[in-house]
Length: 75
Image (cartoon, rainbow, N blue to C red; front, side):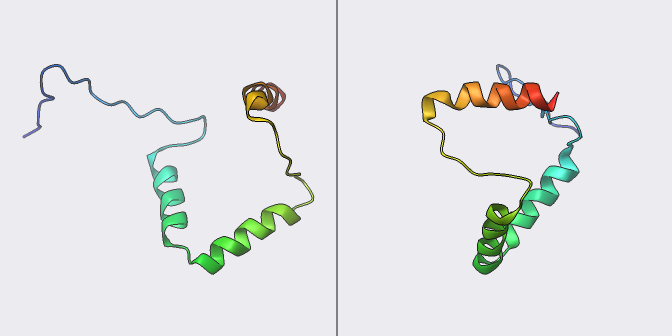
């Protein structure tokens, strides 16, 4: 027997980015919730060593503009 939503409550609809679904989100959560501190530190260090990317500080007020530029470039 399905529970009916209470009056006045909207049913929550999950929306995922393109290529994502509930299974992929759960796998990602499982990865991060179950890794040790040492594994997390190694993963963080590896992000800074990946030659395909760079890390930089962006003033908070510019973050929305930077996100838009990245999204535009990504297509």
